[in-house]
Length: 240
Image (cartoon, rainbow, N blue to C red; front, side, top):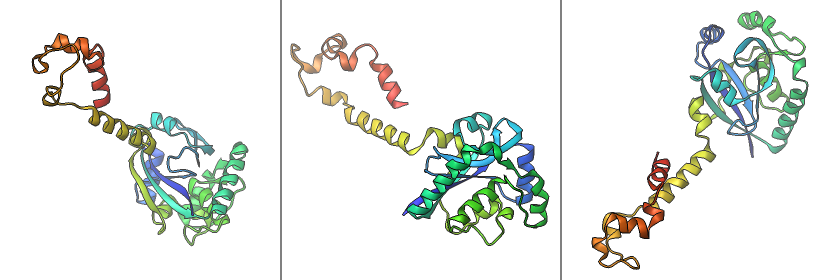
């Protein structure tokens, strides 16, 4: 069994506030990803996160979005699919990205969505309608609506979503699983190297008589790795 990932996004802005009021929910943008970290993810949205006037099919850049919207919030869901379905979805996404400038955001279709009237404009989609149509082509149905009327709310209500993350984009970007595992390993390694004063007193170092009465200069001379220059900086770095 394989997985694809749907990220629902909440960002600030006047246009976002209008969509939020219309949908009656927090998340107003949808992204499709091929991995849990959204390293390869696509959507219909702003070509430049800072410029709202130009929109179309683009590959998502989490760091660029975070710089434009530091308070953005993501809800990431995992959907099961077959290996063949994922391969087909991946192939289609990459093909469409190569001709991305032929695709545009379906601004003229927004009144039809408000009226609940299905429509089709060649090469024009909303973030939700593109993903809904793509998934339908590979026998994954989000809801019973025509793809042009699917909204982010339908993705939020999809019964087969499994939420794997919900929170700030900043926390997601800087605490992806790989980084968290590295940090955890470093913490364990640091914990294993901590030695108490009582434990140190049990041992005699070569050339030093009366281990329990050693002074600081003796320690610095005989254990430069623990007490030498830069030791405190290393401890702070690992402990922070």
